[in-house]
Every structure is written in structure tokens, then in C-alpha cells.
Image 1 (spheres, rainbow, N blue to C red):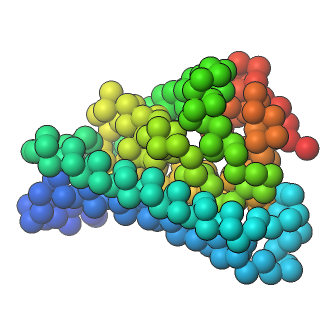
Image 2: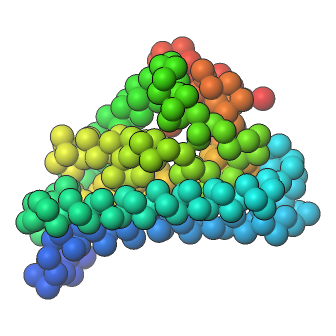
Length: 250
């Protein structure tokens, strides 16, 4: 049984009608719009309008200032558009080669699940290693990663992409960030599998930076990282538990 077998004829028809490079670029942009921009704007509007009912769900309770919110939006938008431009430039220069596997034959369910798990696990390992390096190397932290941690005591959803452009292409700008791109290339994962993982990971990143919480340990754990930057260095808890850098948030 093929992965999304009902979608196979439509996918093949799409590839016959449009160039794979255009499909890749459009798919990447769409996944970032769906995974980052839409949920990011939801939290942005909550912080902008500051409804009284939302205050109990914030940690801490205070809303970020409007100036800080617009700062997050400007930087996040700049990083997103930079990623789109560089990706398009690469596809133009490397034509007809693409970054991801844009194959007319969709993978089987078994292959798709294997690719998803493989990209996730390898990506989580790379995220932990690169993130820890950014914190433990004084030069890298001061010149690059400290910008992300300088967003203040009240995280916002859009702040997940607030930071140096190097940070964006190492950690955050999925699927173009190294933590996803390298595993996808090594494992030859189909672009639709990579985009599915990227959308879910981006949504998780937006929520974990939002300052809002509801029975979601990711939110608590990442808040603990912004309180103590030597702890909770992974996107999820598995690597921190393995390397004794996990701490339960308060």
C-alpha cells in the first residue's frame, strides 16, 4: 500500500505539469507558512490584543510590549524571506538538481514511517549537539545565539525565529535548517515526509516559545531552558535525559 495512495495519481499529474524545482520551492514555502506563520500570528494577535482571559495561561503572566512584538515579527519575517530567496537561488543555480527527493513515486507507509523516524531522531541529535555548542562556545553564543536569548522574559510565538540568520539556518528554518536538511539528504527522505515532519516541528516550536501553556511539557521544558540556558538543550527531552542536561520546569 502506498503512502497516501489515493494521492498518487494527483502527485504524478502535478510532477508532469510542473517542474520539480518549482514544486520543491513551493512546498517548502507552504510548510513554513502553515507550520510557523499561521500559528505564530495567532499568538501574536493574542499578545497584541491582550485579552483578560488569556493572562492566566501565560508564564509569566505579563504580556510582551507591542514594541517587542513588532521586533519579533520583523526579524522572523526577514529570516523567512531570506530562506526563501536563498533556496530559490540554489534551485536556480543547481537546476535541475533539487535539495530534497521530489520523486513521482510516493513511498509506502512502511518506508514513510521509517524515513520520518530516521529524520526525526538524527535531526534531534544534531539539534542537541549544535545547540549545546552554541551555548558552551563563548564566541558562538555572544555573536550568534545570544540574540535569540535576548528576547526578554516573556517569550512570544514569533520569537522561535527571532535570532541571527546563522541560527535560522542551523536550527529553526525547517526544512532548510541543517538539523532537518542533513538527515533528509542522508536518508533520502521524500519531500512530503520531510514537510510533514517540518510542519509539526514548527508548530511545536511556536507553541514552546509562546509563553502559553496547557498540559504541554514542551512549553514548560523550553521555558526552563530560557531560565537556565545550560539545561533542556534538545528540542525534546530525549537527548537531555541521555546526557544529563534535563531539568523539570517549575
